[in-house]
Amino acid sequence: MTYRTTTDGKKISLLGYGAMRLPTVDGGHANGWVADASKANIDQAMLNAQVRYMLEHGVNYFDTSPAYCRGESEKRLGDALKASGSSREDYVIATKLSNFAPQQYPLAECQKMFEASLKYLQTDYIDNYLLHAIGNGGFKTFSQRYLENGALDWCVKLREEKRIRNLGFSYHGDPKAFEWCMEHHDKYHWDFCQIQMNYVDWRHAKEMNARNLDAKYLYETLTAKGIPVVIMEPLLGGRLARYNWALAHELTPLDPEASLAKWAIRFNGTFPNVMTILSGMTRMEHIEENVATCSPLKPCDEKELAALERAAQALLALNTIPCNQCQYCMPCPYGLDIPAILTFKNEVLSAKTPMSAKEILKLYAQRVPEELRRADHCTGCGRCAPHCPQSIDIPKEIAAIDAWIDGLKNEEAAR
Image (tube, rainbow, N blue to C red; front, side, top):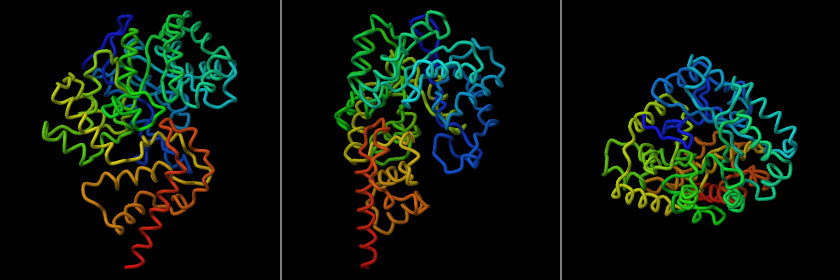
């Protein structure tokens, strides 16, 4: 395993485990919304085996949140780490102040969340504690969650008391929140920062959404200030791991045996100020492949980086919807499977050859099998949109998909 060294001298595995998509007994993952969660219970035995495998193969960074996996992630990860038999000093735990709901803004509620995290993770300290998704909802929301209520100052005290060892934040969305944190680095001394970075977002995040900041700018700004970088979304919500002819056309000739996921991990690991790359690995084969990629990591050379940039441009030319399947938009109050609908369209756009109307309709029925969860049941209420870290205008996209499907049905009926 390739390791990176933090500012305080601790060795961190380049591959980190993001406990956001824990395996379920039905073969899925626990971040997905389901009508009956009891039918998609987390597979604790599988998780225990996965955590044990990662520890045995050098992975020592485990990232979770009170908000992940329908609120179960911290407890399940804590149980798995305990079951591994490893010493507490053998691994690093990162969790977050995920006070997204207004009723969680008061400092007393933040303190309750922190104490619950310690309990579920079966520890008396947190290695890396994050202000969670500081740009989501705009600067006013950031201020309410962390500044006006005194939560940030309280986190600094936790660090002084060694109840947390390092303080950082994860960044989505509003640039003003990121810039504020940079302007106040001399006061708060951020120990690390977690950003969305991959070979598409490196130069094109702002191109996909004007509110975004390119990962290149974020990385270089943090590096200039000596703040280590933790990577989230290295696979762009899986979009850079699933087969896509536009990506494969550029990358496969360079290494016919390499998966697309391997290219994405190698890209991020090429940058020396990257402390760890988080991957939400659900299946054991995902873990095994990513461990192999980082043991040791082979940095990308200039020729490979140029090919990755061409691949990014090819993906953007498909005009897909930037949905990373994070599920923050769920549940829909009207029952729609929003991520499935959006990624279905991306699958059609990413096909190597154009699909016929009949093929598209068949794929739609496969990807969103329950009719009541399809696009035609969207009311346009807009409750989903504010929760999207990618700032997708979800009602607009769903309406466009509904009109598109109607047109395809009419086309088929006229045959």
